[in-house]
Image (cartoon, rainbow over all chains, first blue to last red; front, side, top):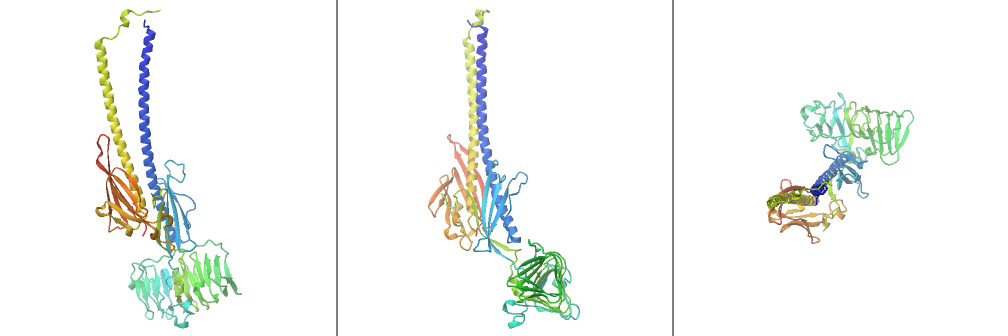
Length: 397
Length: 181
């Protein structure tokens, strides 16, 4: 005989069926969700893989720009984040120089997405190796370069500018004097270059890109040039010099002569009214923060080879070359006014902001200076490129 | 104890049973029909996604490898259905002067065989499958931009019921820019 209690037990069967249906639907939903999630993760990995590659490419471009400005660039010290909006990633760069070819740089870049943390979700990385050939621009190209203006001599004074090659002997020896002493400014202003008195420039004269040589170059009645008057095909770029050497303070040479052996020095200022004698073989490089004043017999080198002495002026203070002693060397002062008023003259070349040669002085451009490479503004050409990958795709199966 | 009366324990009539069976059948049939449609749609979606992933991966691999080549070392086959190019050996990328060591390069060919996109390293004579269900491939160069190679891949898969997915072949295009010279 069925009781009410039995009927209640029969209703439990419906509940069981409902539970089973719910469980089945849940399993189905879970499977569908898991599959969708797998596809979403695959898409995220693909997305990140492309970002990682582009980060590595961006890092290569970054390194090329850095190398163009500084051939001694060695890479990033740590991970560089490039997160922007929904794109997350970054890169690292390492630049090395092979021992057997110092004009080659090996750039190794790694791109990461979403970051360099390998445990990040959908982490991807890509690595690129690029070989670059470096062709350094010369540190000096012109006898005189000034960013803004060049003024050569006052009335009835001469300020000759010519050229020679110290590799073929001293100035005037072996007939090595020539007419390759080009002078140039970046400025396109009127009378950016003024040649007065009996000045003779034995070379070409250039005003800035887009300028007008007819108005940019003022040649006095008694002045002359042997070359052409023209415009620069592109602006000349002379980066501000820098050094990691610690400054040794002011260098004042007055009264007794002083000696300086070949090497690199960093002074706050340089003032010579007697003689600073360079000794030893090799190049002497002097970095000066402030003013430079060379008078008396000036800086005396034993071989009188201009490439053996280069003065870099880090700031914008004036550089004066006066006195009776000749100056043999290069002056790299792209932010300074340079005055050449001594009777001895300059044997070498000058890079300046403004150049003023206003007495019976002269400048003899040494063509050997044009072979001194610059660490800056190098020309780069990519000689080989390779993307590293975990697949043996290059020659693989 | 409360007892049930006789009419309380009476069974179902035949008519009631028939109605219940008929309704149950309709509900079951409907449920299966809905489930079948859902399964088919799911299968379609999955097939499309699988095709897309396969084609995308194939394009990625091809572009990745073509990038290693140089403009003068890429040849598009007749009709644009195949591509032959050289890639430097990754274990010997540069020579003594730090330029690409083309002397040790391998020659790679991409071509379609039935519905398989195949890669053959003709230097080692090894072949591998890059992607399946490929119905067409087109390679093209550009004289104005010789560093660019354009690849268009079409894919379609036949289900067990004979239905083609997608109805029109899925088409994806990618460009590879060769980096070496």
